[in-house]
Image 1 (cartoon, rainbow, N blue to C red):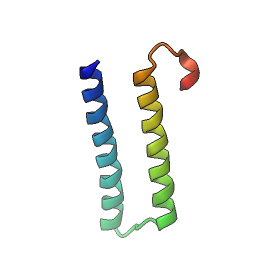
Image 2 (cartoon, rainbow, N blue to C red):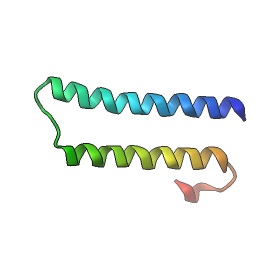
Image 3 (cartoon, rainbow, N blue to C red):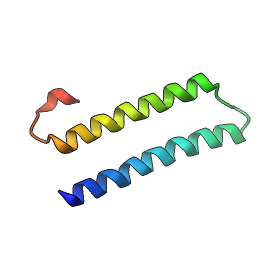
Image 4 (cartoon, one colour):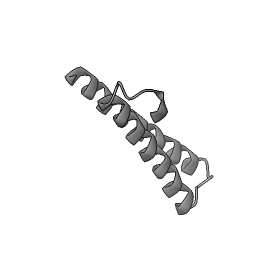
Length: 66
């Protein structure tokens, strides 16, 4: 269980870093996203992480969670 939690935390960190990298690269290319679009992107990432954590802590809940 501890290994799964550590793996999930590493995955969450990588997801956050990927989003930050995408935002930074787009900004460096001159395609700055509006603040509202960035907020929507973070909400989507947050919801995906919450679903990932629910699947981690309730592995026998079935396929209805995703």
